[in-house]
Length: 405
Image 1 (cartoon, rainbow, N blue to C red):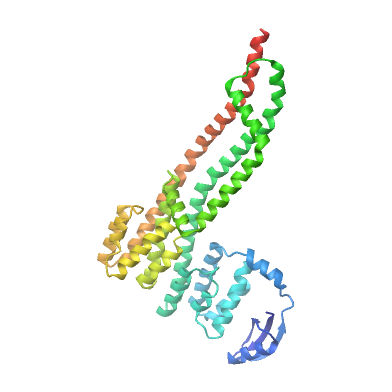
Image 2: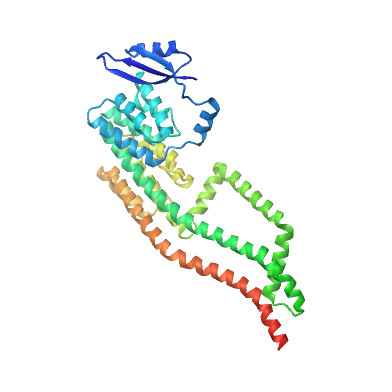
């Protein structure tokens, strides 16, 4: 659908401009008049991308957590300064650096300008604004605390981004080291070792067992490498298809939570996300059952999500949240006890945020300790493997020296 750039004057005579999508200029003019504006000009946007390029942009463009943090803070500041929501959105649509977010804000502004609520306008863009975001904005609109909710969302996004970054750092570094190590080993076995094979044969001396084993591995890899590649591709395909099923995702993520050290980091990060999301929603005035359903869809872990479902069923029956938390093996007993105290004292949102702060600090300290330990350990392991390969290369040389003597 083509886009049109318009200029119009409001009831006070103030000149405004913006962009609307419609089939023709007449429809744009009708929309503007319906909003109470006096139309000055309507012109087609010649800069509009072709349909194909727009689809490609839509496919690959991404709005990150940092973009949303800046958007929330700037919008909260403008609203707090007395600028209307529509004017604030209009200013932000021209100022934000992320082109995808700029486009979305323009559409949200048009919907709000047409008389829709802010939360319903945001809900039309689920790839940018999560259910958590939309529901908190809805609560802020209903309670007249939109500025406070926007600041709270910005803080929430910053904290979530920080903990996610720490977990990614903890998991990414060892994986990269292992990939580099495997690449070096394959290069030595398939590239370097075969060049010594003719020399070994010309020696006419018995080869040590490590050298014989590496020669067999080298021969097999060079002759059957396509079996290895096909096996890896088949295994990855089967894994991702299995993980795409509800049962598969649950079992895979349950297994990941049980991995030593790394599983503990992921578990603590998931508990932190659960507690902070639920605490933020309750503190923003979202009803407890609705908040639990939102957490179930946004917690990012199927195992934790299943527990949240059980908690929601317990609350729906008029029972406590703490009971299913105490019975769940994933959640430490401390969480259940603290939630019980929060329910009894009426400070559940505060208690949940304290739980999140505690596990955030646990994740940060664990990642720091892991970073200082894992590098030397991995270097020792990699050095040992490379050393064994080098030893297998030079052992026949030592045998040849003995023969010469």
